[in-house]
Length: 117
Length: 113
Image 1 (cartoon, rainbow over the protein chains, first blue to last red):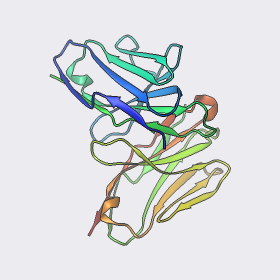
Image 2 (cartoon, each protein chain N blue to C red; image 1 turned 135 degrees about the horizontal axis):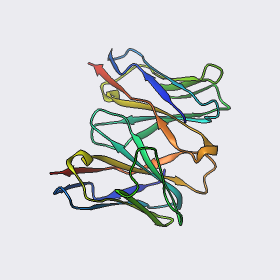
Image 3 (tube, each protein chain N blue to C red; image 1 turned 135 degrees about the vertical axis):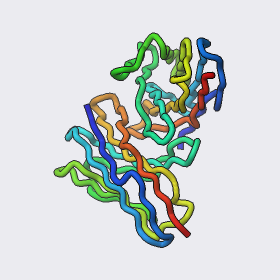
Image 4 (tube, rainbow over the protein chains, first blue to last red; image 1 turned 90 degrees about the horizontal axis):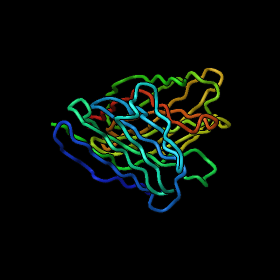
């Protein structure tokens, strides 16, 4: 299957700093990437849909100025958590959809665990 | 938007027994229903999926059934093994809505040896 990587796998930062997370599709072109957040013992919640070359579409309740998404190429999307606070501590997972694939399968990255002190 | 309900939230079974997880969805336009297995701290792994033009699909010990009329789909795991212990998520997606996945709340499955 298709491979999606994510970097870093974990990060610890001080409150008020910004953190950038990268999501890469390694062996296919991802016209669409998705960013999820997962709190402990909870389900994955979609934050935003990232389309190559256009602005991201954010889900209701997600602050677009706090969670900056850039999808500058067909293999890379980045999520920047600006002015992070302890309540932003979570497991962030990206997924990518093969733009050429007939079906809807999404391929998930390994996730990034963010801890804000 | 789409809403996916998943039951039960926890499921404990004896090794060798079957496990069944049920999900319902709200949007009749949903056309793709994947099931994921997630181990602690890891990414969700697709274990089986079904499309809206199919009623049932099986892959070794895992099967999924879909009832479009009732808008529900189920995951069946037979001959459970301790390594089946994990959290399982169902999801639904609508191709016309950008293929966004809406996840169920998850089921924590524990297979007791």
